[in-house]
Image 1 (tube, rainbow, N blue to C red):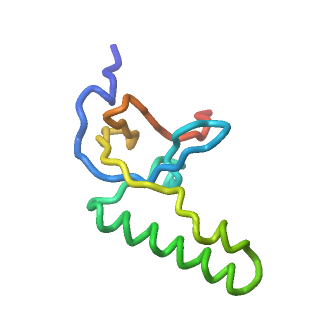
Image 2: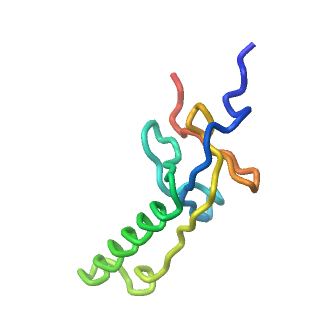
Length: 103
């Protein structure tokens, strides 16, 4: 019998989430194998959001983005449990893994 790799978290970390119209709450940053990207510290996640905002502001300055869109920060940080398979879960019961299809 195969054991559930989500049975016991192997660590806790932080993810950047965003609320989408089609999917609801989802991780906004993904890494290897399309798994949610996890940050060891809240500060690391905050720096990533700040860098994303600076990119949007530069796009506004370059004329490629509207001001309101550049100034809106939709991403937010959530503490998550990280499981052995790289999937994550949060205290609201959301669970995310890779979106890649296994062949």
